[in-house]
Image (cartoon, rainbow, N blue to C red; front, side, top):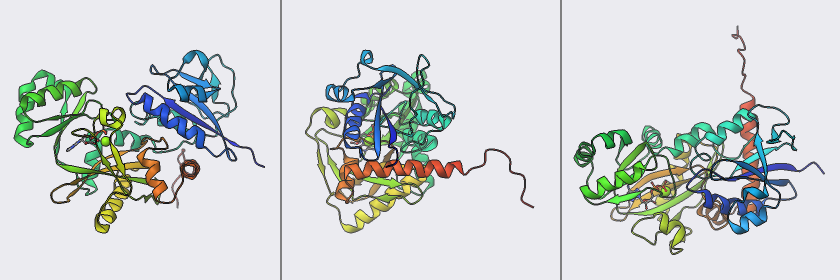
Length: 368
Ligand SMILES: Nc1ncnc2c1ncn2[C@@H]1O[C@H](COP(=O)(O)OP(=O)(O)O)[C@@H](O)[C@H]1O
Ligand SMILES: [Mg+2]
């Protein structure tokens, strides 16, 4: 039998979604097909140190990374055969592919993807550009609009602009957007720093809060809408899953109702007319292509409660990946089991890597 492929599972990370990543990685570690793959768990602490974890089940059970129980490691950002090493220089068995099960900053935003590109290691999911574009709500929405996708009206505000003159920023927002509106940091996830503002006082407080997390902020027209999500998978020819619906436990789908209350519900499949379902599946693939995504993504939608108008809210290039998360659940409902999903995503990582390798990196001269 051929050698098993060593799959580096990167998890934790310097992000507000550190805990969620540990949960996602625990599910991935358990379900990886041991006939084909050998998982190698690499934990990233909150301050960004990397550790090889030899007994990862302990970490996954506890939901916490204990640096004293790991071996400090790094990936060298050069395409060398021996690019996986301990910090004191011992060469480790190389990784064949990396699965960055990282959500949010320093993981889902193109930074880790850039490191893996330099190291020449195939990796699961979106490349540098799609990861970064999918993470930045301002850039993402520009690309969506450019691709003709329906998005809710928004205004980008820089933190310095707001801090220099909060009243002027509030005037500008009020001249363009009506209450209620949503204020968000541009580069974050899990609803961290997101608030709903119903008047000027709340708007200023919301901008102050979002300013704690990012230098770029977004104010968006609030709408009364159902929240529908659709999974996408593939490289050149992505396909979409059946859509699902989130019924948030709170006033909106905030951090509390995502992770803490345990009372938000998932409806799979989402109760939609077949026309609505087709349109959402179609838009999900278009959104995927609009940011030049590859591997996987979850595309989130708003469907207004009164008229059924559909808007693309966002794309998540490394969506929640626990066994009970929406992304794998939607695939399960579409006939792809969790284990099959992982194998397929790894195959897609190799496919993209090989395709990129075809590119010449030296001038080839002009064809006569
Ligand atoms: N324009 C909007 N109108 C109504 N609800 C919104 C709007 N924007 C965000 N929300 C609510 O806030 C939640 C989080 O916003 P989202 O943009 O998805 O940020 P995150 O990337 O943190 O998930 C959404 O799931 C939704 O419940
Ligand atoms: Mg969201």
